[in-house]
Length: 291
Image (cartoon, rainbow, N blue to C red; front, side):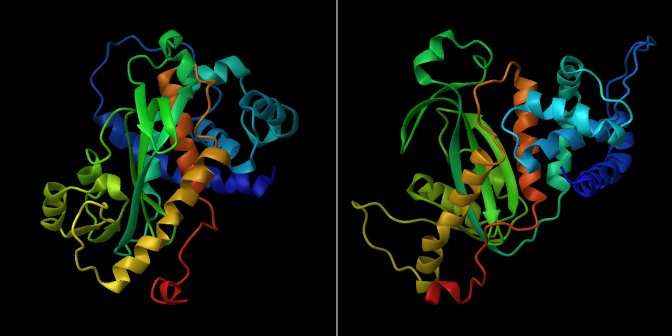
């Protein structure tokens, strides 16, 4: 692993936490006077750096990755704890990780693409026996078939940057989280037929967002500017991003043993993608559609 990359990630995380943690602690509910007697040798910044680096360098097994850190990068951290202890510390990063991912720079280009993808937590045949996610997972259906798990909803810009994301149950309608995903955005959002809704279109239009989708076969043809038709053909950009999140950042696997750790793994994967220098993008949205 490149040490300079570790330093780069650590610097970005630590600079954020220096400002965020005092704000977060000021909004926590008051606790008893009893203070924990056991302190952690790893700082929150180091824990988050380790989790992000796992998705950056491409290890397929977190335990082997952590053993690799202990053997070759022990001098880069204050004091690495045991693997089991580190796993128990992961859930401390849920809230900071979420806000850190939202704080990363994003460009409001006015051209956005939206889609959802299934995050399977186990084989659907084992759904009744699965215990870890029984409170939040459900059966759902996508174009590829039935699955058991949850849905990740994404909105990205034409530069390949993730503008916002949310989690819903597997059986939820894709249109439910759209208003929150498009919050504070202005421009055009291109999506598939699953987002067709006159009511949703009017709500978003009132907030400065124009939702553009293909029409179904049984619907009357409506006038659509050629520019919008060209941009609908470029929706593959968000499918490419989802593919990278699943196969490179590994946001989907069936080895989770707790919901908080699952959420941290997912946000860490999205954060690692956001920190990449090269992202799938439409090189020039004003000319690529005409080539």
